[in-house]
Structures are given as structure tokens and as C-alpha cells.
Amino acid sequence: MKLFPPLLIIISISLHADQIDSLQAQIDQLKEQVNTRQERASTFNPGITVFGNLFGCLGGADDEVEHDHGAEGHEGHHHGAACPNSLWLREVELDFRASVDPWADAVLILSLEQEQPGIFSAEVEEGYVTLRQLPVINAAPLGLKLKAGRFLTSFGRFNKIHLHDLPQPTLPFIMTAFFGDHGLARNGVSAQFLIPTPGDDNALTATIEVVGGGGIALSPIEDHTWPGFLGHLGWFFNLSDGHDLELGASAYVEPQNNKPVKPVQVYGGDFNYKWKPFDRGEWRSFLFGGEAFLANVPDQISGNLPFGFFAWSQYQFNQNAYLGLRYTYGQNLIDRTHYKHGVGMFFTYYTTEFLRFRFGYERLVDRVVASAGENQVMFELNFVFGSHPVEPYWVNR
Image: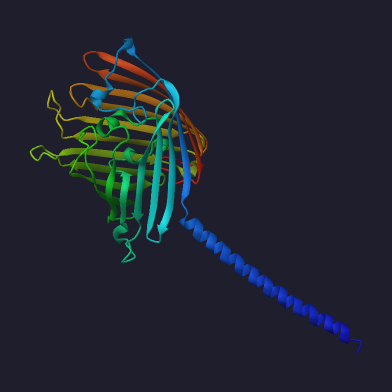
């Protein structure tokens, strides 16, 4: 009988231990349910990023010559080459990205741009949904990606890049001359797919887009009733370890409302070479690229077709510092016998991927009746906070 009380104690402790284990299992199950619900909620809640772009520029023309930038097309002070001779908050972008469901992702990018000191304009820069696979067959033949909404079209490379991701402070002036201040952004539908190629060291991508027409320098009619049709081919080659090359060709065709008038046709070619020797350390790279543009719209004086191009390079010294060069050439859209060209140098310093400083100098020369040049000294500060979307090809961070 003396052993009975200790035995009861042992049994009681054992029962309590079983209850504790049961309660702990219930707690773990509840935690797992909460975590699952939180993961589901975060999956369908948008990732939000804010991009700020502070821009300063000082410029002056030789012999106080007044330049007529408008003769080449609208060169606004936001993305193009015109110099405002001031420091201002050039643009703020709000970037929202989320999974809509297992088949689709959505992107909404709102832009606030400073038109005048203290006066901002707001617009939807991009807003589209991308189908990663077709809902009925639950597959993506040839890697098909369907995009619908408003987006930066796939003409060349730079046209698809937002201001804060450019490797230079401004767009090349030839792009703003052909397509306007914000590039070729359109409402429409885009289909991108892979074309089979021999070998594993290359990939061929085709993009076909049907978009709204009008509203650009070469086709300024806003109430356009005909859509535009755009195609782009991009061929990527892995030349060897650390050496990549991509070649591209673009075509944009836009029928006119007046049937006897020929459709507007713009053709482009682009290339991009990247050297990144991982065997020598992560923070070294060199990039060299360019784009060319040709339209079938003859000018009003000589009857020639407008042509322009730009070439650029960028070398990465270390984890934080980059040095870039750019040359741009473009003919006047009214008289092709007149042209402008410019050379620029740009130094970029990243503290982190969320804060970037850039200093630049560009010399622009008009070839009209007499040579007239303009010098621009530029400063740019980009800051990012919030979730960070995928960075473009030349950002090596």
C-alpha cells in the first residue's frame, strides 16, 4: 500500500503529459493553418514599390543659339534630351504587382510627373494582365505569354524600360523624336512565344502586338480608328562562359484613316552584348548595345526617309561604380538634310540597389545652316522603397 500514492502520481503525470502533447499538437496545427492563410493572403496581395527620380540639369547653347527641338519631334523634359536648367522631382512611380490567380499576374504602374514647378500630372503608365498559361488547357504552348491592357510595346530594348531603370539619365533624343516623350506606350494585346532553334546555347523569341494607333510624332492623329501592328524578334546567344549577345529586329505598321495615304511603317534593329566574368569576381561587367530606327514617311523638303540610331556602353568597376558612354544621331523629321548628334558620358554610383546617384555630361550639336552646339551637365538621384520587382538586364546587383 505504500507504493500506491507514488503510482498514482506517476499515472497522473503521464496523463498530464499526454494532454500537454495533445494540446501542443493542436497549437502546431493552428499555427500551420494561420501560416497557410497568411501565405495565401500575401500571395494575392500586391507587392508595392515606390520609385522616386530627382533630376537636375544645367545647359547652354553656343553663341546663344536658340534650338528648335520641336522640329525633330516633341522632346519633353521628362525623358528626352531637353534641359530644364533646374533641379526637380522629375517623376514618382507607384508599382503594384500581384498574382490574380494560378493563371494570371497583374501589373499597375502609376506615374506622377512634374510638368511645372509644384504642378504634377498623373497617368497610368502601364496597367495590364499577363496570362502565364491558358486556363482551359492549363498549359503555355511554346512558352506563350499573353498580355492585355496598357503597356510599353516591344519595339527595341529601351522602349520597354522605365525611366528609373535606364543606364543613362535621359532617353536618346532619337527615340523621343520618333515616338514622343514616353516612348511607344499603347493599349492593346501582346503575345510572346518561343521559336524552336537548334542547340541549347541560343533562344529565339517572337512578339506580336495589336495596339491602338496615332498619337506619335510620325502619326500624330489622336482620333485614330485603325490599330497598329507590331512585331519583334529577339535572338539570344550564349557565346561562351561570361559572354552573351542578343540581336533584335522590330517593325511597326499603322494604317491611316485616309485609305489613299500609305500606312506609317517604322523599322528598327537592336543589339546588346554583355561580358560578365564570374571567374574574376562578381562585380565586373561590360555592356555594349545600340538601336537604329528608319521610317517610311518622307520629309516635306527632300523626300528622304528619316533615320537615326544610338550606341552605348557601360563598364562596371566594382560593386558600386559604373561608367557609361552614349552616341546619338538623328535626322530632322521635317527636313532630313538637317540632323543632330550628341556624345555623353555618365557615372553611376549605387550605395545599394535602393539608392543610386548619377552624374552626366552630354554635348549636342545641330547641323542646320551653321553648326550650333549645346552642353548639358546632369545630376540624377533614384530611390526605391517597398518590394522590388525584377531589375533589367544590365543591372548586375
